[in-house]
Length: 404
Ligand code: GCO
Ligand code: MG
Image (cartoon, rainbow, N blue to C red; front, side, top):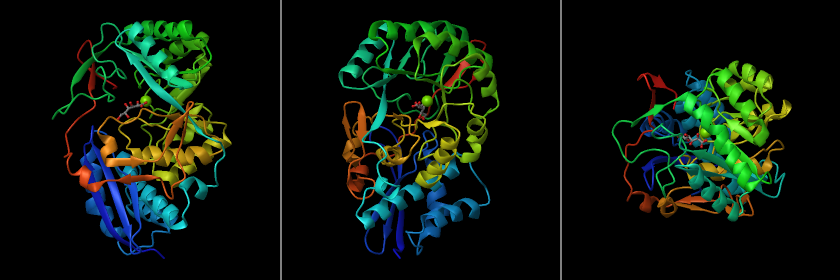
Protein backbone atom coordinates (compact mmCIF):
# COMPACT_ATOMS: atom_id res chain seq x y z
CA UNK A 1 0.00 0.00 0.00
CA UNK A 2 1.14 3.52 -0.82
CA UNK A 3 -1.03 5.95 1.07
CA UNK A 4 -1.98 9.31 -0.45
CA UNK A 5 -0.99 11.87 2.20
CA UNK A 6 -1.29 15.11 0.26
CA UNK A 7 -3.34 16.41 -2.68
CA UNK A 8 -2.65 19.90 -3.98
CA UNK A 9 -4.02 21.94 -6.87
CA UNK A 10 -1.65 24.33 -8.63
CA UNK A 11 -3.01 27.04 -10.94
CA UNK A 12 -0.36 28.74 -13.02
CA UNK A 13 -0.17 30.64 -16.33
CA UNK A 14 3.26 30.25 -17.98
CA UNK A 15 2.15 31.28 -21.48
CA UNK A 16 -1.43 30.25 -20.73
CA UNK A 17 -3.45 28.88 -17.81
CA UNK A 18 -2.82 25.36 -16.59
CA UNK A 19 -4.32 23.53 -13.62
CA UNK A 20 -2.10 20.79 -12.23
CA UNK A 21 -2.83 18.22 -9.53
CA UNK A 22 -0.01 17.05 -7.28
CA UNK A 23 -0.51 13.85 -5.29
CA UNK A 24 2.05 12.74 -2.70
CA UNK A 25 2.25 9.32 -1.05
CA UNK A 26 3.52 8.36 2.40
CA UNK A 27 6.67 6.95 0.79
CA UNK A 28 7.37 10.40 -0.70
CA UNK A 29 6.42 9.62 -4.29
CA UNK A 30 4.86 12.50 -6.22
CA UNK A 31 2.41 12.06 -9.12
CA UNK A 32 1.28 14.83 -11.49
CA UNK A 33 -2.08 15.18 -13.23
CA UNK A 34 -3.40 17.74 -15.73
CA UNK A 35 -6.75 19.34 -14.79
CA UNK A 36 -6.80 22.14 -17.36
CA UNK A 37 -10.14 22.97 -18.99
CA UNK A 38 -9.59 25.97 -21.23
CA UNK A 39 -11.69 28.96 -20.13
CA UNK A 40 -13.22 27.06 -17.18
CA UNK A 41 -10.02 26.39 -15.26
CA UNK A 42 -11.19 27.53 -11.84
CA UNK A 43 -14.30 25.34 -11.95
CA UNK A 44 -12.12 22.22 -12.16
CA UNK A 45 -9.70 23.61 -9.57
CA UNK A 46 -12.61 24.03 -7.16
CA UNK A 47 -14.11 20.61 -8.00
CA UNK A 48 -10.78 19.08 -7.06
CA UNK A 49 -9.93 21.24 -4.06
CA UNK A 50 -13.39 21.31 -2.51
CA UNK A 51 -14.80 17.91 -3.44
CA UNK A 52 -12.09 15.46 -4.45
CA UNK A 53 -8.80 16.13 -2.67
CA UNK A 54 -10.26 15.58 0.83
CA UNK A 55 -11.61 12.17 -0.31
CA UNK A 56 -8.21 10.98 -1.51
CA UNK A 57 -6.27 11.34 1.72
CA UNK A 58 -5.43 8.01 3.34
CA UNK A 59 -6.38 5.95 0.26
CA UNK A 60 -4.11 3.49 -1.52
CA UNK A 61 -2.58 5.15 -4.60
CA UNK A 62 -2.20 1.73 -6.23
CA UNK A 63 -5.94 1.12 -6.49
CA UNK A 64 -6.39 3.17 -9.66
CA UNK A 65 -9.49 1.45 -11.02
CA UNK A 66 -11.22 1.47 -7.66
CA UNK A 67 -10.51 5.18 -7.17
CA UNK A 68 -11.82 5.90 -10.68
CA UNK A 69 -15.08 4.06 -9.95
CA UNK A 70 -15.31 5.74 -6.54
CA UNK A 71 -14.98 9.25 -7.99
CA UNK A 72 -17.26 8.55 -10.96
CA UNK A 73 -20.07 6.53 -9.43
CA UNK A 74 -19.64 8.00 -5.97
CA UNK A 75 -20.42 11.55 -7.12
CA UNK A 76 -23.84 10.48 -8.43
CA UNK A 77 -23.61 13.33 -11.03
CA UNK A 78 -21.91 11.93 -14.08
CA UNK A 79 -19.93 12.83 -17.18
CA UNK A 80 -19.43 16.42 -18.31
CA UNK A 81 -16.15 18.23 -18.90
CA UNK A 82 -15.61 19.52 -15.36
CA UNK A 83 -16.20 16.19 -13.62
CA UNK A 84 -14.28 14.14 -16.17
CA UNK A 85 -11.31 16.52 -16.21
CA UNK A 86 -11.08 16.35 -12.43
CA UNK A 87 -11.25 12.54 -12.42
CA UNK A 88 -8.69 12.49 -15.24
CA UNK A 89 -6.23 14.56 -13.22
CA UNK A 90 -6.41 12.10 -10.32
CA UNK A 91 -6.12 9.10 -12.64
CA UNK A 92 -3.11 10.49 -14.54
CA UNK A 93 -1.32 11.33 -11.27
CA UNK A 94 -1.96 7.80 -9.96
CA UNK A 95 -0.46 6.21 -13.10
CA UNK A 96 2.54 8.51 -12.69
CA UNK A 97 2.93 7.29 -9.09
CA UNK A 98 2.55 3.63 -10.05
CA UNK A 99 5.20 3.98 -12.73
CA UNK A 100 7.61 5.73 -10.38
CA UNK A 101 7.16 3.05 -7.72
CA UNK A 102 7.60 0.27 -10.31
CA UNK A 103 10.61 2.08 -11.81
CA UNK A 104 8.98 1.85 -15.26
CA UNK A 105 7.64 4.33 -17.80
CA UNK A 106 3.84 4.22 -17.87
CA UNK A 107 3.71 2.72 -21.39
CA UNK A 108 5.37 -0.40 -19.97
CA UNK A 109 2.55 -0.77 -17.45
CA UNK A 110 0.06 -0.51 -20.34
CA UNK A 111 1.53 -3.55 -22.09
CA UNK A 112 4.71 -2.09 -23.53
CA UNK A 113 5.46 -0.36 -26.81
CA UNK A 114 3.36 -1.54 -29.75
CA UNK A 115 5.33 0.76 -32.07
CA UNK A 116 8.69 2.53 -32.11
CA UNK A 117 7.34 6.06 -32.04
CA UNK A 118 4.16 8.13 -32.05
CA UNK A 119 3.26 9.74 -35.40
CA UNK A 120 2.27 13.35 -34.73
CA UNK A 121 0.71 16.12 -36.76
CA UNK A 122 1.76 19.73 -36.46
CA UNK A 123 -0.27 22.91 -36.95
CA UNK A 124 0.40 25.13 -39.95
CA UNK A 125 -1.57 28.31 -40.54
CA UNK A 126 -1.56 31.62 -42.36
CA UNK A 127 -3.49 34.83 -42.80
CA UNK A 128 -3.50 34.03 -46.53
CA UNK A 129 -2.65 31.04 -48.72
CA UNK A 130 0.96 32.06 -49.35
CA UNK A 131 1.67 32.53 -45.66
CA UNK A 132 0.10 29.12 -44.99
CA UNK A 133 2.25 27.49 -47.69
CA UNK A 134 5.39 28.95 -46.07
CA UNK A 135 4.32 27.52 -42.74
CA UNK A 136 3.61 24.09 -44.22
CA UNK A 137 7.06 24.17 -45.85
CA UNK A 138 8.68 25.05 -42.50
CA UNK A 139 6.99 22.09 -40.80
CA UNK A 140 7.90 19.65 -43.55
CA UNK A 141 11.50 20.90 -43.30
CA UNK A 142 11.44 20.16 -39.57
CA UNK A 143 10.62 16.55 -40.39
CA UNK A 144 6.87 16.40 -39.78
CA UNK A 145 5.10 13.70 -41.76
CA UNK A 146 1.64 15.08 -41.07
CA UNK A 147 0.46 18.69 -41.07
CA UNK A 148 -2.85 20.34 -40.27
CA UNK A 149 -3.55 23.35 -42.51
CA UNK A 150 -5.77 26.31 -41.58
CA UNK A 151 -6.00 29.72 -43.25
CA UNK A 152 -7.99 32.86 -42.46
CA UNK A 153 -11.27 32.85 -44.40
CA UNK A 154 -11.58 36.04 -46.49
CA UNK A 155 -14.14 38.42 -45.05
CA UNK A 156 -14.31 36.58 -41.70
CA UNK A 157 -12.37 38.22 -38.91
CA UNK A 158 -10.60 35.77 -36.55
CA UNK A 159 -10.75 32.35 -38.18
CA UNK A 160 -10.21 29.42 -35.82
CA UNK A 161 -6.72 27.95 -36.01
CA UNK A 162 -4.91 31.08 -37.20
CA UNK A 163 -3.00 32.55 -34.26
CA UNK A 164 -1.52 36.02 -34.11
CA UNK A 165 1.86 35.97 -35.84
CA UNK A 166 4.54 34.17 -33.84
CA UNK A 167 2.09 33.05 -31.14
CA UNK A 168 1.19 29.49 -30.40
CA UNK A 169 -2.28 29.95 -28.90
CA UNK A 170 -5.72 30.31 -30.45
CA UNK A 171 -7.22 32.57 -27.84
CA UNK A 172 -6.86 36.34 -27.53
CA UNK A 173 -4.68 37.80 -24.77
CA UNK A 174 -6.07 38.09 -21.24
CA UNK A 175 -9.65 39.25 -21.17
CA UNK A 176 -12.43 39.23 -18.62
CA UNK A 177 -14.98 38.38 -21.35
CA UNK A 178 -14.54 36.45 -24.59
CA UNK A 179 -13.82 38.31 -27.84
CA UNK A 180 -16.54 38.01 -30.48
CA UNK A 181 -15.88 37.21 -34.11
CA UNK A 182 -17.95 36.90 -37.31
CA UNK A 183 -18.62 33.69 -39.15
CA UNK A 184 -19.80 33.05 -42.68
CA UNK A 185 -20.35 29.45 -43.77
CA UNK A 186 -20.62 30.12 -47.50
CA UNK A 187 -17.26 31.96 -47.63
CA UNK A 188 -15.65 29.10 -45.73
CA UNK A 189 -17.13 26.38 -47.94
CA UNK A 190 -15.85 28.14 -51.05
CA UNK A 191 -12.42 28.86 -49.56
CA UNK A 192 -11.46 25.59 -47.80
CA UNK A 193 -11.13 23.39 -50.94
CA UNK A 194 -9.04 26.13 -52.58
CA UNK A 195 -6.67 26.33 -49.59
CA UNK A 196 -6.20 22.58 -49.22
CA UNK A 197 -5.88 22.19 -52.99
CA UNK A 198 -3.11 24.81 -52.98
CA UNK A 199 -1.24 22.83 -50.31
CA UNK A 200 -1.43 19.61 -52.35
CA UNK A 201 -0.49 21.41 -55.54
CA UNK A 202 2.63 22.86 -53.98
CA UNK A 203 3.80 19.93 -51.82
CA UNK A 204 2.22 16.87 -53.41
CA UNK A 205 0.72 13.86 -51.70
CA UNK A 206 3.70 12.44 -49.89
CA UNK A 207 2.64 13.59 -46.42
CA UNK A 208 -0.58 13.49 -44.40
CA UNK A 209 -2.80 16.56 -44.71
CA UNK A 210 -5.40 17.34 -42.03
CA UNK A 211 -7.94 20.11 -41.50
CA UNK A 212 -10.09 21.16 -38.54
CA UNK A 213 -13.61 22.40 -39.37
CA UNK A 214 -14.21 23.16 -35.66
CA UNK A 215 -17.89 22.23 -35.47
CA UNK A 216 -19.02 24.91 -37.94
CA UNK A 217 -21.18 23.05 -40.49
CA UNK A 218 -24.52 21.33 -40.81
CA UNK A 219 -24.38 17.65 -41.82
CA UNK A 220 -25.25 18.31 -45.44
CA UNK A 221 -22.71 21.14 -45.67
CA UNK A 222 -20.13 18.83 -44.14
CA UNK A 223 -21.01 16.16 -46.70
CA UNK A 224 -20.45 18.69 -49.49
CA UNK A 225 -17.10 19.81 -48.04
CA UNK A 226 -15.94 16.22 -47.62
CA UNK A 227 -16.87 15.48 -51.23
CA UNK A 228 -15.12 18.64 -52.50
CA UNK A 229 -11.96 17.58 -50.63
CA UNK A 230 -11.87 13.98 -51.86
CA UNK A 231 -9.40 14.76 -54.64
CA UNK A 232 -7.00 16.21 -52.06
CA UNK A 233 -6.82 12.88 -50.18
CA UNK A 234 -7.17 14.25 -46.68
CA UNK A 235 -5.91 12.21 -43.73
CA UNK A 236 -9.04 13.54 -42.05
CA UNK A 237 -11.39 16.44 -41.62
CA UNK A 238 -12.02 17.10 -37.95
CA UNK A 239 -15.23 18.06 -36.15
CA UNK A 240 -17.22 18.81 -39.31
CA UNK A 241 -20.42 19.26 -37.27
CA UNK A 242 -21.07 19.70 -33.52
CA UNK A 243 -19.94 16.45 -31.91
CA UNK A 244 -22.83 15.98 -29.50
CA UNK A 245 -25.27 15.18 -32.33
CA UNK A 246 -23.90 11.72 -32.96
CA UNK A 247 -26.52 10.51 -35.45
CA UNK A 248 -25.83 13.54 -37.70
CA UNK A 249 -22.65 11.83 -38.82
CA UNK A 250 -24.71 9.23 -40.69
CA UNK A 251 -25.72 11.89 -43.16
CA UNK A 252 -22.11 13.04 -43.65
CA UNK A 253 -21.04 9.44 -44.27
CA UNK A 254 -23.68 9.02 -46.97
CA UNK A 255 -22.05 11.77 -49.01
CA UNK A 256 -18.30 11.43 -48.69
CA UNK A 257 -15.36 9.07 -48.29
CA UNK A 258 -13.17 11.77 -46.72
CA UNK A 259 -12.18 10.34 -43.30
CA UNK A 260 -13.74 11.98 -40.24
CA UNK A 261 -12.24 12.66 -36.81
CA UNK A 262 -14.29 13.70 -33.79
CA UNK A 263 -14.03 13.77 -30.03
CA UNK A 264 -12.06 16.59 -28.42
CA UNK A 265 -15.19 17.91 -26.69
CA UNK A 266 -16.46 14.47 -25.67
CA UNK A 267 -15.75 13.33 -22.15
CA UNK A 268 -16.75 9.71 -21.81
CA UNK A 269 -17.23 6.42 -23.61
CA UNK A 270 -20.97 7.03 -23.57
CA UNK A 271 -20.53 10.34 -25.43
CA UNK A 272 -19.00 8.51 -28.39
CA UNK A 273 -20.74 5.14 -28.15
CA UNK A 274 -22.93 5.66 -31.23
CA UNK A 275 -20.16 7.31 -33.26
CA UNK A 276 -17.98 4.27 -32.71
CA UNK A 277 -20.41 1.35 -32.74
CA UNK A 278 -22.17 2.59 -35.89
CA UNK A 279 -18.78 3.27 -37.54
CA UNK A 280 -19.73 6.89 -38.18
CA UNK A 281 -16.15 8.15 -37.72
CA UNK A 282 -12.64 7.01 -38.61
CA UNK A 283 -10.69 8.57 -35.73
CA UNK A 284 -11.67 9.16 -32.11
CA UNK A 285 -10.07 12.30 -30.67
CA UNK A 286 -10.93 12.16 -26.98
CA UNK A 287 -8.10 13.45 -24.80
CA UNK A 288 -6.58 11.85 -21.76
CA UNK A 289 -7.24 14.92 -19.61
CA UNK A 290 -10.85 15.60 -20.64
CA UNK A 291 -12.07 12.01 -20.90
CA UNK A 292 -11.35 10.52 -17.51
CA UNK A 293 -7.63 9.90 -17.65
CA UNK A 294 -5.57 6.96 -18.87
CA UNK A 295 -7.97 4.41 -17.37
CA UNK A 296 -11.03 5.69 -19.21
CA UNK A 297 -9.26 6.69 -22.44
CA UNK A 298 -7.99 3.13 -22.81
CA UNK A 299 -11.56 1.89 -22.47
CA UNK A 300 -12.73 4.24 -25.23
CA UNK A 301 -9.84 3.18 -27.46
CA UNK A 302 -10.58 -0.51 -26.86
CA UNK A 303 -14.20 -0.02 -27.90
CA UNK A 304 -12.95 1.86 -30.97
CA UNK A 305 -10.58 -0.98 -31.83
CA UNK A 306 -13.48 -3.41 -32.01
CA UNK A 307 -15.12 -1.23 -34.70
CA UNK A 308 -12.02 -0.38 -36.73
CA UNK A 309 -11.86 3.20 -35.48
CA UNK A 310 -8.35 4.50 -34.85
CA UNK A 311 -7.13 7.02 -32.27
CA UNK A 312 -6.19 10.64 -32.89
CA UNK A 313 -5.89 12.24 -29.48
CA UNK A 314 -6.44 15.93 -28.96
CA UNK A 315 -3.14 17.62 -28.16
CA UNK A 316 -3.69 21.37 -28.36
CA UNK A 317 -1.51 23.68 -26.31
CA UNK A 318 -4.25 24.14 -23.73
CA UNK A 319 -3.61 20.56 -22.61
CA UNK A 320 -0.53 20.78 -20.40
CA UNK A 321 2.75 18.90 -21.00
CA UNK A 322 1.55 16.43 -18.32
CA UNK A 323 -1.39 15.61 -20.57
CA UNK A 324 0.71 15.35 -23.71
CA UNK A 325 3.10 13.00 -21.98
CA UNK A 326 0.25 10.81 -20.68
CA UNK A 327 -1.22 10.70 -24.20
CA UNK A 328 2.12 9.60 -25.65
CA UNK A 329 2.35 6.66 -23.23
CA UNK A 330 -1.12 5.51 -24.29
CA UNK A 331 -0.36 6.13 -27.99
CA UNK A 332 2.76 4.00 -27.83
CA UNK A 333 0.89 1.07 -26.31
CA UNK A 334 -2.55 0.82 -27.95
CA UNK A 335 -2.98 -1.41 -31.03
CA UNK A 336 -5.36 0.93 -32.91
CA UNK A 337 -3.28 4.11 -32.66
CA UNK A 338 -3.79 6.49 -35.59
CA UNK A 339 -2.05 9.80 -35.00
CA UNK A 340 -1.39 12.27 -32.16
CA UNK A 341 -1.93 16.02 -32.34
CA UNK A 342 1.16 17.99 -31.32
CA UNK A 343 0.86 21.73 -31.16
CA UNK A 344 3.62 22.35 -28.62
CA UNK A 345 3.40 24.76 -25.69
CA UNK A 346 3.90 28.51 -25.73
CA UNK A 347 6.82 29.70 -23.65
CA UNK A 348 7.54 30.10 -20.80
CA UNK A 349 5.76 26.75 -20.22
CA UNK A 350 9.10 24.92 -20.16
CA UNK A 351 10.13 26.91 -17.06
CA UNK A 352 7.37 25.15 -15.13
CA UNK A 353 7.06 21.78 -16.91
CA UNK A 354 10.23 19.70 -17.39
CA UNK A 355 9.48 17.07 -19.99
CA UNK A 356 11.32 14.03 -21.31
CA UNK A 357 9.52 13.38 -24.59
CA UNK A 358 11.58 13.77 -27.74
CA UNK A 359 10.79 14.49 -31.40
CA UNK A 360 12.59 12.84 -34.27
CA UNK A 361 11.66 12.44 -37.96
CA UNK A 362 7.96 13.09 -37.46
CA UNK A 363 7.58 10.90 -34.36
CA UNK A 364 7.43 11.67 -30.65
CA UNK A 365 8.60 9.27 -27.95
CA UNK A 366 7.61 9.69 -24.29
CA UNK A 367 11.05 8.63 -23.01
CA UNK A 368 11.94 5.98 -20.45
CA UNK A 369 11.87 7.90 -17.19
CA UNK A 370 9.77 6.09 -14.54
CA UNK A 371 6.17 7.30 -14.52
CA UNK A 372 5.07 9.90 -17.07
CA UNK A 373 8.42 11.65 -17.40
CA UNK A 374 7.17 15.15 -16.57
CA UNK A 375 8.13 17.11 -13.47
CA UNK A 376 6.54 20.38 -12.37
CA UNK A 377 8.61 23.16 -10.82
CA UNK A 378 6.27 24.52 -8.16
CA UNK A 379 8.48 27.48 -7.34
CA UNK A 380 8.66 28.57 -10.96
CA UNK A 381 4.86 28.17 -11.19
CA UNK A 382 4.27 30.81 -8.51
CA UNK A 383 5.74 33.47 -10.83
CA UNK A 384 2.79 33.06 -13.24
CA UNK A 385 -0.54 33.83 -11.55
CA UNK A 386 -3.92 32.91 -13.06
CA UNK A 387 -4.76 35.08 -16.06
CA UNK A 388 -8.44 35.02 -17.21
CA UNK A 389 -8.72 34.15 -20.92
CA UNK A 390 -11.50 32.83 -23.07
CA UNK A 391 -11.99 31.19 -26.42
CA UNK A 392 -13.76 33.60 -28.75
CA UNK A 393 -17.51 33.51 -29.41
CA UNK A 394 -18.73 33.33 -33.02
CA UNK A 395 -21.63 35.33 -34.43
CA UNK A 396 -23.14 35.06 -37.91
CA UNK A 397 -23.60 38.12 -40.09
CA UNK A 398 -27.09 38.63 -38.65
CA UNK A 399 -25.67 38.72 -35.11
CA UNK A 400 -26.87 35.28 -33.97
CA UNK A 401 -24.50 32.97 -32.13
CA UNK A 402 -22.74 30.23 -34.11
CA UNK A 403 -20.53 27.40 -32.86
CA UNK A 404 -16.89 28.33 -32.21
C1 GCO B 1 -7.57 21.26 -31.83
C2 GCO B 1 -8.63 21.99 -31.10
C3 GCO B 1 -8.19 23.11 -30.26
C4 GCO B 1 -9.36 23.66 -29.46
C5 GCO B 1 -8.86 24.04 -28.11
C6 GCO B 1 -9.97 24.54 -27.23
O1 GCO B 1 -7.94 20.56 -32.75
O2 GCO B 1 -6.43 21.38 -31.46
O3 GCO B 1 -9.72 22.26 -31.92
O4 GCO B 1 -7.52 24.11 -30.95
O5 GCO B 1 -9.95 24.75 -30.07
O6 GCO B 1 -8.25 22.93 -27.54
O7 GCO B 1 -9.49 24.83 -25.97
MG1 MG C 1 -9.96 20.52 -33.06
